[in-house]
Length: 115
Length: 110
Image (tube, rainbow over all chains, first blue to last red; front, side, top):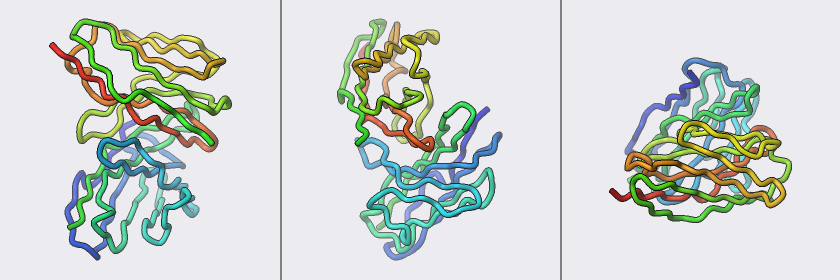
């Protein structure tokens, strides 16, 4: 149980294009999902908290107009990197939060490379 | 602010025990976690401990929590080459958010 998937697992795009990453909880519902980014050899940095049915809450320094988050249902959150640039290249990881156990389950990550 | 610190590297021989240490700052954390990350993969939840516990054992894993010193450790008994990975400790803060340490890269030599 508690499986989280991400799609795609990797993507290469040209500078200026937009990329959408999906995060799904496969066997449970999550009112809250989190989005992180991880640079090589570094820790995970929380970007935003995605709440079903309401606007996402962004961490300080994260541009909400660049990283659009939509929590369409209790099992799906999407992150869209708009007008991507090479500095947006990173490993993006989502997690789904289960309130009752105060536990986050992580997706396998999406490797974004912007040329 | 909240901060979680870990040593960056640990090298052990196969069959030895590994101990990965972590310190945190937020004394109101309800749960503390250990995650494992293999190259190019997401995070796998290894174990967690409730803040009012001192110790938790789960097969080869033993978690020790010293709440007074805000110190958390993960002991892996009989370490295997398959245990080579990066290990992150994390503390939960308000709203389910996690603050991660920098990660400890565990290298297991045959």
